Image 1 (cartoon, rainbow over the protein chains, first blue to last red):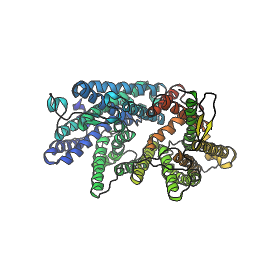
Image 2 (cartoon, rainbow over the protein chains, first blue to last red; image 1 turned 90 degrees about the horizontal axis):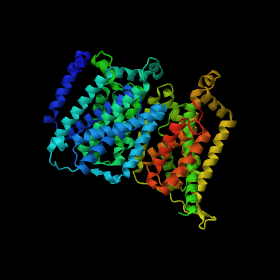
Image 3 (cartoon, each protein chain N blue to C red; image 1 turned 60 degrees about the vertical axis):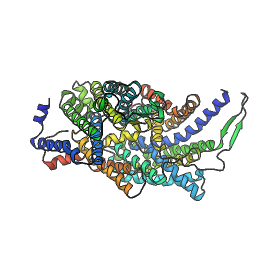
Image 4 (cartoon, helix red, strand yellow; image 1 turned 90 degrees about the vertical axis):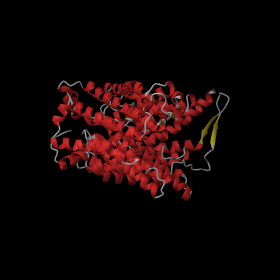
Amino acid sequence: MIATLLKATPPRARVLLALLLCVLLVAPAFADRYVVSVLVLVFWFAYVGQAWNVMMGFAGLLSLGHALYVGLGAYVSAALFVRLGIGPWAGLPVAILASVAVGAAVGWLGFRFRIEGVYFALLTIAFAEVARIGFDHLAWTGGAAGLFLPVSTGGGGAWWNLRGGPVFFYYLALALACIAFVLCAALRHSPLGYRWLAVREDPEAARALGVNVFRARMAAVLVSAALASVGGVFYAFYYNNLFPSQTFDVARSIEIILAPIVGGLGTLFGPILGAFILTPLGELLIALTEKAGLNAPGTKAVFYGLCLIVIITLAPNGVWPALKKRLGIPQEEA
Amino acid sequence: MSPSIVIEVALQGLLMGLVYGLMALGLSVIFGVVRVVNFAHGEFAVLAMYTAFVLFTALRLDPFLAMLPVAALFFVIGYALQATLINPFIDRPEHEQFILLVGVAIIMVNGLLMVFGPDARHANLSYSFDSWLIETPFGSPVIVDKVRAYAAGAALVVCGLLFAFFRYTLTGTAIRACADNLVGAAVVGLDVKRLYALTFGIGLACVGAAGSMMVALTDATPMLAPSFTLLAFTIVIVGGLGSMAGALVGGVLIGVAEAMASLFVAPSMKSMVSFALLVAVLAVRPQGLLGRRAA
């Protein structure tokens, strides 16, 4: 699988990719704590952006409630760990299952009743809101007061219970981002990937060609939800605290979709590039306002909102297609 | 539980629902004509609340009077927004329009957060707690808040004016023509882009009026904005996107349902009920209660 992918990648892109990966692999040895923590965020947003991109970029389904799948993954794995002492690796399949089940419900409701476009986007927001209110009232996961993971390593140590330091999570996040990239690249060039594109471009024409539109869309939602929930497990064990009002917030869902939109919808590199552009700029903005003595909590979000407007007005295909031309990478990827 | 409490809460929900309905009407008008979904709708409602709040604290202007200048201001904002930012998007894919307005919404809610902070702002009207007592055969009387009744009455008046505008004026008829048949409207020589800008202005004027009234009823905080957006969408989808009467019916339905939910379940669970209604309507009658099929 990886061999065919490599063959499909133009040599110039292969060299650049290898260089980037090498730099990132040795980065923690030189970079300080703060840079490492920002890079963890970059990888995380690249990862969940990739997950969201499967739905919107590949299959043309706008989800504005992806915090739902991320949050479910986070809450299920964290609750299993805190309440029942089940470690994250055993909790992971349960978390994926929970997100996939909910994704199936959203997808079934949406596609069975032909809820499309904006209506579908609203349905996804509504489900995320229901989850937020539901978890606010669920005493077993701490309700609105939040769920906290013990920082001590317990029995299993750093690896088994994901109780490591920043560098540990750095490599974990990097691995996640790489795996998602390879997986999405493989999916994108698989028969299913071509069906997704057909459905995205013209559902009626795809149906006429014999593509089962319902199944293709459902597959996109399930894959996307599963990937997102793994991102949620990482989030829970990295931050060690979960609040329904943050985890399932519309603002979180929007944060997730920023990187792929800015980087390039439907491209494989878009989410990664977008995360590398937006996250450091956002963090820099926070650092600058703090240094200036301003306590303006909305600054970063206003900046993100401006980015959205500028990108969607001037370059709705994102930064990556333009950059690709600059770098002289010819192959059409999206 | 005494029946008069149930009647009282239902009545409160109904009155509140009419104000919600006016807010949702703005969304419905914009979608019905411009075919652009205003994702920043709740954000505009909260901006209107803050505008009315500032007018009240600085000039002692009663929110029910502030309604007029705020609606006028929002008409101008809406017109300018459509004419500059949104008109280039009318032929673009749906998700691009949506993302554009998501961007506008983020900037607005966080701009409010930066200017006013996260605390709730309360407009202390002299008649905030005035009420009427209505005798019932159940023993205890039903209490009706005067502010709520005023707000609901004002919402009905604004809606009536809007119905009349679309029904009886030439501009209103031209706007309806754009909604019914865009190509036909362009062929007979209507300036579609200007009419779109007018419509967006009218839609935001509704929000401006509704937001001003809302200052008299609830505290203003930036955090209300996303939930108002969702509320407006829920109302409009339940009532039928593009149907003016549907927005009011949906508003009342959601208002009463939420009031009942906060009485019988818990106030914090009330939006669950509207989402359940939303999902039920989407599944059974996707065009909404009063919507036309394939609209």
